[in-house]
Amino acid sequence: MRVLLTGGSGFVGGHIARALAASGHELRLLVRPTSDTSFVDDIDFERASGDLRQPESLRAACQGVEAVVHSAAVLRAANPQEFMRANREGTRHLAEAAAAAGVKRIVYISSLAAQGPSPGGAVESTEGTPHPVSAYGRSKLEGERELEAVSDRTDVIMLRPPLVYGPRDSGLLAFFWMARRGFSVRLGDGSRLVDVIYGPDLADAVAALLDARIDSRRCYHVSDADGPFSWNDMLSALGDAVGRRLLLASLPPAAFHGIARCSEWWAKLSRSEPALDRTRVLEMRQRAWLCDSLPLTEDTGWRRSTPLEAGLRETMNWYRDQGWV
Image 1 (cartoon, one colour):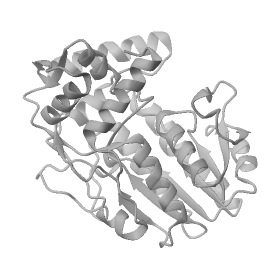
Image 2 (spheres, one colour):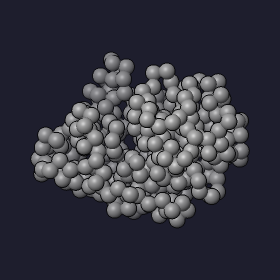
Image 3 (tube, helix red, strand yellow):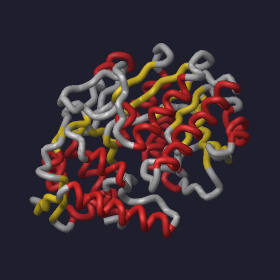
């Protein structure tokens, strides 16, 4: 199958590109002139120059492909408008271009943030009423709705991953950097719960969704079957990955908000993406982020391959090899 992939130069998109190539799909990557594709330069792909903010460039990129995997997104931003411009408006432009080009299936990498947390400590169905708590989550939910608007013309499949980690991720890099030096910080007592997924395992789920015979307008979770994990569990496993017990410092939410404000201020000055923003801190403060990948397994046969400890170890080794930590 010929597939157009957005975000292929990024963390999640790069792993998806490798998984799709390994599955035998013909890849076309939507890239900007400044995109760094070094992570995927060893696989075969066709470059399509384009930008989600420029609808005319997307029409050409969608011509002649059978499926679109949309993984490009803004994950951290200094204000809600930036999230909406990228994650809602950019998705609308792509959805309209794909439907007009006769694309048969669109797989959208959404987020558990679009659904919202689990305040009662129980998994909530993807068919329930979404209740995002952050600007990022609201923008991803709006992206889903933009795709639903074209679901009468093409199959639309949503995938809502929880916290994603793995090689090339910059979102959790600070925790790995601290762990290698024998310490880490945590929000409060570390008892908050999260489901997680290893980047390459998420990519394998995307490949499975492309090939599966399933109805349009389906929405799935994808997660590690051993979860959920408390942040204390995560930091303990991270300590095992570096071969030492970590010294933990508990910080109140106000401290994380202060760090986020400084990060946003610096990002504005440097015209870059903040390492941490207030919307991410708001998500970190929630009691639980839980999901259930059983429906995905039942419909596609996908199962996660990499336990948490192994995934963290492989990620740390990659960071070391690249000099990131």
